[in-house]
Image 1 (cartoon, rainbow, N blue to C red):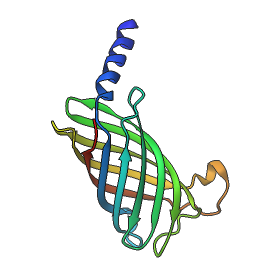
Image 2 (image 1 turned 135 degrees about the horizontal axis):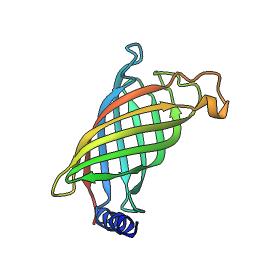
Image 3 (image 1 turned 45 degrees about the vertical axis):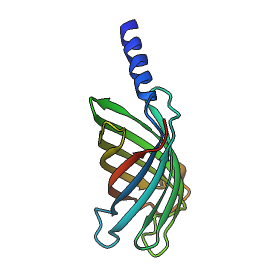
Length: 160
């Protein structure tokens, strides 16, 4: 058991040496429903504040139809050589603009990222996520249509 914890600690230390990242994304909002499908644009900041494989995130997303989402959350980043696997979660404020009504301004996002880390610490990959207001858990909205997005992202290292 001590060997497992030592390996986990060593893995965490190597991970913590990664720089802060500025993440840019472009993709498809509400990929499953043609009626609301539109372009999505995103920018995120991922500081080099790491606890084991846990990395915080703050960001903003906007769609071509005027919807927007400002959020904060975290991801778990696991590496297999240069490939990154990162389940993530965020909560934030959603404004529908001229786009899809998700039922409530507080929306939760859960997703998975798969990417590649270059030698200069830049990253390129795909992020698939689901966003909804968790109506069954919180009962604060009568509607919870949810949506799924697919985003191509590029992460630029900005500090060491």
